[in-house]
Image (cartoon, rainbow, N blue to C red; front, top):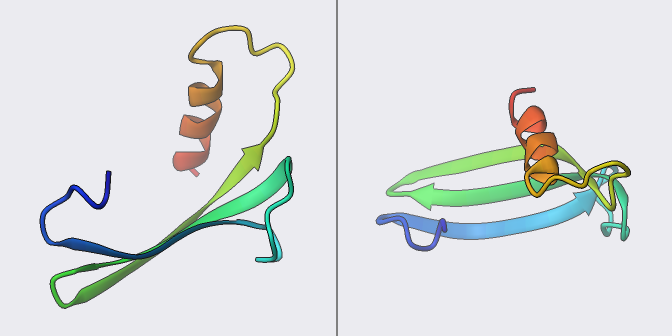
Length: 72
């Protein structure tokens, strides 16, 4: 998605554990991104949870969890 945006050059997009080590198969982590928009370098990160969520039988259940993190 970022690669398709005009003028955006992605430096990296990585999923890491909360200590910035390799991401485990499930648990807490961070999604890190760096990109260039013209001469400006953009950096961002967000806390995420990886794994299966019990009681999430709705197709949009996982999306709702991710959206709640974006509001933090």
